[in-house]
Image (cartoon, rainbow, N blue to C red; front, side, top):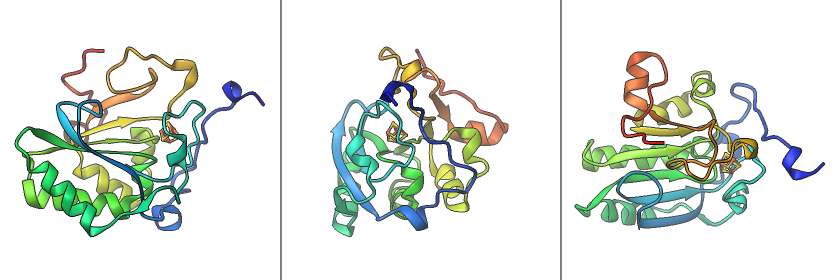
Length: 193
Ligand code: SF4
């Protein structure tokens, strides 16, 4: 089947679990970048994503064994980098952060312990907000630690390179605390397009 006709995978609720899939591997770490969210950010790319979206921006990181194991040394480096006053926050992406919750939960809890809410935390995910509400406890625990979630699969048919921080028009930049409080998706207040 031509790649453009294939769709991303659609898991049933709780079908995919970090404790079965994650190898706790990291595809990349990029400190001090300007592209993975608002302001200057430190970005952690976790390994493994079974959504397999055609046109995925990071195909290598779909493999749960790609890259290097997450280490305490890397975590300490991320905390040191985040402590720079000009860094706005941490970004989690991949791969699928919500299928690497062992790594991501440990890191976001450390960030909150060290910095409280002085640094913000963004995460990308292939899950939609609505799907995550029916997901495993570890995924919900990670969601609760976030400020911003960019949700949904990358859909080639809705690809739009003019959008802020996302590749296809179905994806949303969601204000997580406001959405949890309101009981419905609330879009990031700084959205321009
Ligand atoms: S959800 Fe993101 S990382 Fe996963 S396959 Fe799709 S585009 Fe790639």
